[in-house]
Each structure stands twice: as C-alpha cells, then as structure tokens.
Length: 320
Image (cartoon, rainbow, N blue to C red):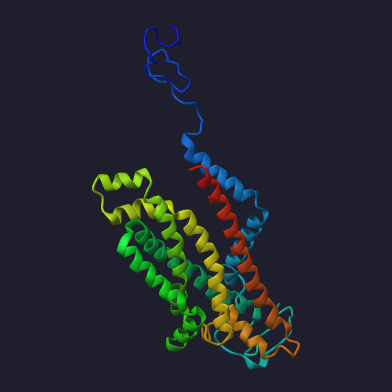
C-alpha cells in the first residue's frame, strides 16, 4: 500500500510526525527517545547551563560537604558537647583533638560540627519560610491588583523603611534566642524581598492566556494564584531562596558574634567566633579560623549556586 498522502484532498488526514500515513491509516508513532514538546528541551538547556558553570559545581560541592560534615560527621566522630572540662581548656591541636579545644574544654572539631548544624538549619529553614510566604504574598498582590495590591505593597514598604538590623537586635533581646526563634525572626525580615520580586512576576503572569482562562471559567483567585501564578514564578523564588540562605547564615553569625544568637550549651558558628575574639591576642588560632572559614565558604557557595540558578532559569524564560 502506498504511503503517500491521499489525492484529491486539501490536506492529508491522520498524518504522522513526517506527514505520512501508516498502513493502518493511523498516525505514525513518534520514534523512541524523541523529545516531546519544548518543555523538556527547555529544562535540559537550563540544566546544561548550570552544569557548565564551574563555580556552581564548586559551590554545590562545598554545600554537600558541609551538610555531610555537620550532620553525618558526629556519627563517626563522637564528642561530648554538653559537659564542660576546664582541665582540657584551650589545648592546641593534637591527635586526640585535631582542632584543639575551646575555653570550656569542648573538642573544637566536634563543636564545629555541632555549631554548623544550627547555622545550616536556621539558614535553610528561614530561607524556605521567607520564600514561601513572600511568594504567596507577592503573587496574591500582583494577581489581584487594584486597591488590595496598593495596600499590601504599602505594608511591605513600611516594613522595609524600618532598619532591619535594628529591628532584629530589638526582637532578639525580647525573645529567648533559640533555633526556632532565630528562624522566625530572620524569616520575618527576609520575606519582604521575595514579596516584591514575585509581585513583579505576577503582574506579567496574570496577562498570560492560561491565567485568563481560569478567570473565564469562573476559577477563584486562590486557585489562580496557587495553581498557576506561584508555580510559574518558581524560578525567581528558587534563586531568591538560595541567596537568602547565605544572608540568613551571615545574619545568625552576626547575632551570635554579639552574644544574641543561640545560647550555650548550644552554639552556632557566630557564637564560636564570639568566644574566639576574647583570645584573639593569645595565639589560639584554632578558635578563630575554623568557624570563620566555614561561614565564608558556605556563604560563598550559596551565592555561587544562586548565580548559576539565575542563569539557568533565564535560559528557560528567554524561550517562553
């Protein structure tokens, strides 16, 4: 049987991918391994851009290393981070204590793992909380528009007018500093940036055909925001979250350095730096450099990751 299109018709019926009919008269099935539609290729292009960024891979490697170091390391390197032992205070690095001990006799390497858990938990949790709330807030404001948008954005402008550092210091002295409190305090000051960014995305997304279709079909504003606007702004939200993790870790370190962070016997990297400054002229370098280097490396790593994610999502957005 001939595989040519039928004669006498303006267009062939039931054409396959190449414009031919198979012997059964049905459209030919696409070849195995063929890419279906533009969506998969856009994700591949974004992933390719990310993989080509060596700084991003370097940053991702540092993040994975510190996650394993802080959360898996204590299962292999056992130390007592509760009971003080002043007889071992400020001992230099040795085979028993690879990074020495601190002024209360805690093993410094174990303390670095223990403090890193708090720093990473607070940084990541605060970034996620701030991003989720800011995304929903900004998406609602930008999608609805009008008077509601004006009121919601004026509230954001009002909070931004208050010096964030001053407000954070005041709140940290009022509430008992702990991991949960620090997460809420840092997130409460970080969601404002996400709200403004996502609001700008929502102003553009609400004019798209698929969002207009929700309105025509009688869909609620909540459904449009949660199911269509917010998910399509995920690229901006993810990039914002990666930068916010670094900012949150630095903010916690700053508060810990001032003695307003997580209190003993718990600690964070900023609290370890605060302790080290008392002995900065005593030659106890092992108290200062490990937490300082850890803070710098993790902050830089998340910034590298954020830059790469921004480039990857820009490739996808250019092809919309």
